[in-house]
Length: 402
Image 1: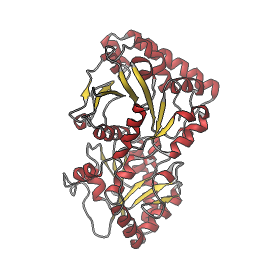
Image 2: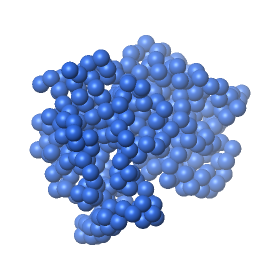
Image 3: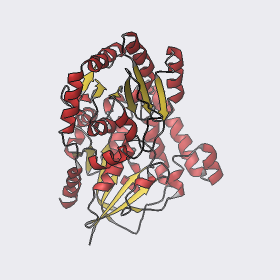
Image 4: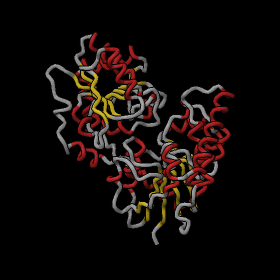
């Protein structure tokens, strides 16, 4: 009898968490493990990357209602879900006001699932699993809608940058046997908020396959979109266009680099809610010819491979998958000094860490551009490093077998 595992996540749109999920799914030994995947919605560019030996469970329309608009919920007749989402909205609003929370908070995301979970059906109710994995928070679904001997919930973000309803979050995390953290820094920030959960934490890094990334990086030629220009240094950043990634400051950093005599073009790979903001900052700074939004790409690796230097200018991260991917492609990597930056790379060895403020970031990037020997050292050290970590899957096997 094979060991039965179910993994629950939202969908497969382009993102670091989704790429991590693909890495996890590719790492399982399917001769020994029977893996079911349940997605709230069968949508996203990465759907085609789900391994064929994964059993993708049928979409349950009530779960898609968590991710669709009010109008679509009305058209589908999901009035119970809609009422609960409205209730969650009011509850979160009053919590914001009472506790004077800022924009960077997790309350509505938590409350929406907390109050809609009662109207959602069980998932594969006829089957009992050996392990249930909730891969993306909130984690109410795997905790309450799946029958399983053991359960793991994943942390992908730095909790020190968010505000939330601590009592509510503590209650749901407490329903899991284990909590998987992607880095020591993520663990530290999480336990500062929830010290009582320390005995549940297990470190399981994002699983990446160097061979897959290198193969994907050679599939297409991107010279028309990222042409090589004489005496021009091409910078590249990839990720969702969100506050966390700090791409709205890229035009200002780029302008200052040009003013210092560095001839650069900075390419942004991704999409998201901040795109209009980023475009407005490009126009404000007059950087239309130097900050180029490539947009959403199912396969970002050829673009990362084509750049001279990869830059991750984030305000905060859990552990950016793109940084490790750029290292696998032997790029000199620059990251800002966000809270968890020390877990991303070895400063001066396989990348460099620069100050997070714009002036400090400009100085750090300029120093690397002008230091060819350091660039060569970073490239050589990345080339000689083994960034493959498929053996992380053995930590999951160990949990099952305890």
